[in-house]
Length: 193
Figure 1 (cartoon, rainbow, N blue to C red):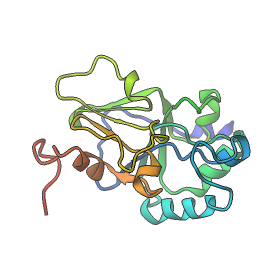
Figure 2 (cartoon, rainbow, N blue to C red; figure 1 turned 180 degrees about the vertical axis):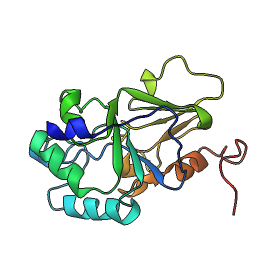
Figure 3 (cartoon, rainbow, N blue to C red; figure 1 turned 90 degrees about the vertical axis):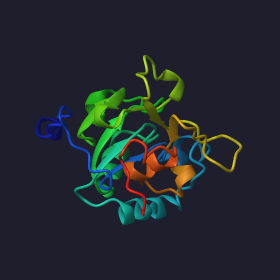
Figure 4 (cartoon, helix red, strand yellow; figure 1 turned 180 degrees about the horizontal axis):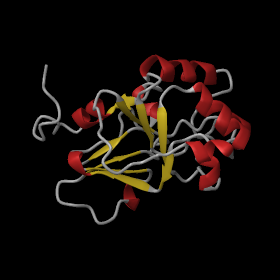
């Protein structure tokens, strides 16, 4: 599409403002059309509330690193939903992001399989088990694990799950995500208040 020509999702050398860069995954928008709300455990009626929650947190110029499973509808749904959601969005593809990359580039600034943020020693990938060749001390921010029968997100000292379900259907800042693993202060990334 024409919008693909206009978007330049240059990633090299990008600086991340920890309080204005958000991470989230597994909203499965339009899931109710395809899977009857099975995956995201949401309904057609809840979708406007989810969009409102997103926009109450994310500003128009904020960056959202979306870690997979954005929309289970078609191309029209993808563009419509992305247009309703605040922020500049980068997609790290998930197992339900099945359209060709060219379609996603109409809704996202960039589309990648995984992403590294070297200065924060982070790897972003949809399925935790797919993170290969981890560097020493590297932490994983991931999604995919939203169907667990648990009350708590599956977060450990070296991995942070950012599925929307675990965070009240709100994107979380990188600062919040890093704080979850209990090592933010150690890495000098977060000042305790």
